[in-house]
Length: 392
Image 1 (cartoon, rainbow, N blue to C red):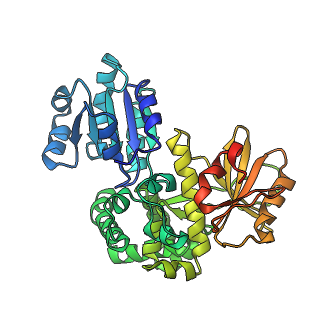
Image 2: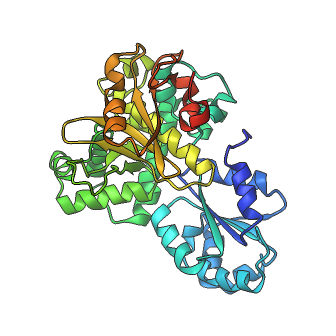
Image 3: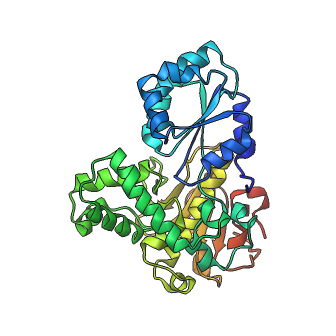
């Protein structure tokens, strides 16, 4: 098993809370991580029909068999269990007693927040970061890295990404969708998700998306919520203040795994990625998700933003640093262009009190030390999230 960057955070909170809840997409490595981090705990998967039936029909009897603690995998399959866990951990609040995992963020979190408020720490595990994937093999060039994505199984077992991601999406449609919502027209829904991939890195326009997909505004909103719930897409909110400035207030659309976005776009070879008109959006997707993984792995919230005003000045990523922000611009081009710094300069000029530091992450291999904003090669992306070490 590749050591996950979140492991120290997981062990730390397990020493403080009686319950730890770990959420994340399917196949992000939650089960492998928990079993490796807590090898002495009993492991119970609620995916098993008999186990799920026992837990649902007789939750007290089920929990009596694991009073000493356990890893309860895919806890959302038995949605009443957190209510019964509350009494157990109140009677015996031994830290790290129960480890819960789940892959449906909103449904699971609503149950956990209602029943286990103050009793559980909540962590989120996304697929591999670039640094984690690099521990298995030196990553290929940028187009190939984007195409492969970061699901652990693809890297660990050296799977063909096209086949693995096709299976992943089919499994998602066949299993999660049928349990989360009544999507009657699966073919139209599949087209809808592909249309979302065609908007990667763009401002989300529900009316335009719904028109192209041939569904109502209400259905568009419901399906976007569904994709968020099941960790397929991430909506990056804009940053704005109440200063009266004319700023964009709609979110931008990204996928939790850039490889899945590439697959949905029909890209199968690195050369196709390199020539695709959406390369810039896919690279942005990569940068935004690396930032999100960095925060989640440290136990931080996912409160990251982008900035855009109505004049088109934009910064792709704003990362909280105290009461200020680290600004990151993502550019897929391998040659540094003066335009790369335009958004950063506008942001720092308009909001000097909010700008802690800024940098550009670009598609080249070697960074550059610039007077105002350093430029980092894409392989050094983690340095963009650490203001103390962001200079090349």
